[in-house]
Length: 253
Image (cartoon, rainbow, N blue to C red; front, side):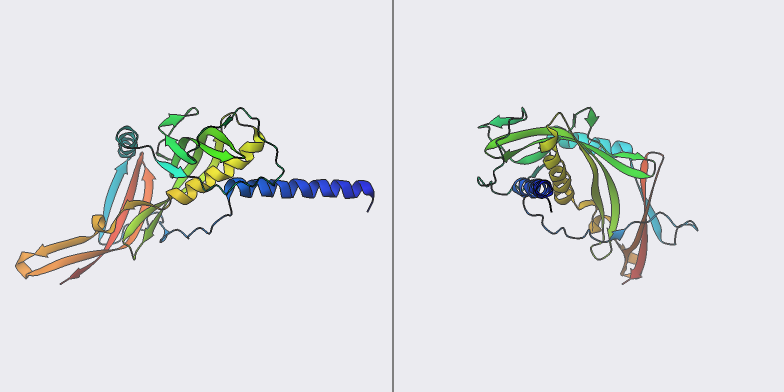
């Protein structure tokens, strides 16, 4: 191989290894993610609802009210960043971006905001999907300085039913992350961190617990109890509402 070719190959390898080193310094070694609980909820059977099926309707206003109450009366949802220990021997130069604040205290977390970056954090029931734009800001310590960032993420929410736990879960999937005015070099580090942390820390989201959907009805005339266990859950979105169809298996004792 020529001397020029060797130099170019060495430069490419250096960029790859340097980028990998920076990623692991900032992000840390990836951890295994547990599989989501239960099975994905399917749409209603086109042949009609099964016997023993009840419906629960959650409209758009319900989600709006829940989020408004959380941001108004509770602490904003916050998720810690797992930052690996800094390594002074990496040879990466000190960052000079305006997004860095020398000596600033870093809380090392992502905080969801009610609105920011031109979007509002909300749940949208549209086009057969549960969409969730999320505004956020955050900070992380990198090479002795504090990186401040803000932006928004586009996510969707899938629904799953775990029969053993008798619980309906939501599974957040962050599709894209959009950062405000940050150097593309550091943006390339922050973007996968935000996406991974939100996907790992938020999930799974409990939508309906077993005790909320279970039935146990005393029947005085029979001196017994009618029990019902959830066997299947289907869902569909129409007219700005989430419709859950819950099919029960009944048993008398």
